[in-house]
Image (cartoon, rainbow, N blue to C red; front, side, top):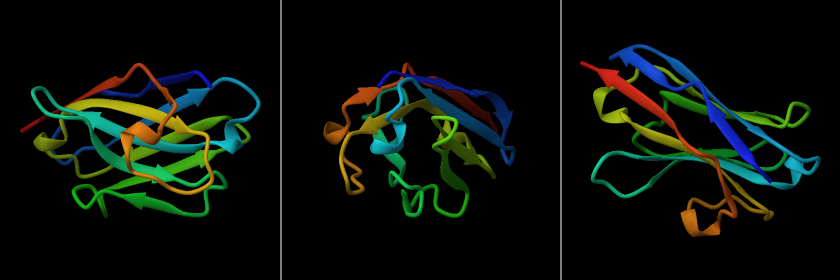
Length: 123
């Protein structure tokens, strides 16, 4: 599956953004989908993941209560709604797909990656 992320940008602290990740192919519903992020000088970190059906998800503690992952299998798209953004959320955000049944938060479990979209939060 090929992934195309979009929706990043520059926003003030406390603001909101919604990231989208469009997938090619007709088997999108077979993939667990996730968002990761990588800040300059830091390792890539898990942000959120959602099951194939969309009925279950997991969020990193650092974003819990502020970010929400969702998916629309009819549109082959996964979203990341980001509210109450903080400067420490500044990073390149990547969507990823894993052809598996259960949720995972490990980057090595994901088969396909989007190109990344920059999110910058100013203080």
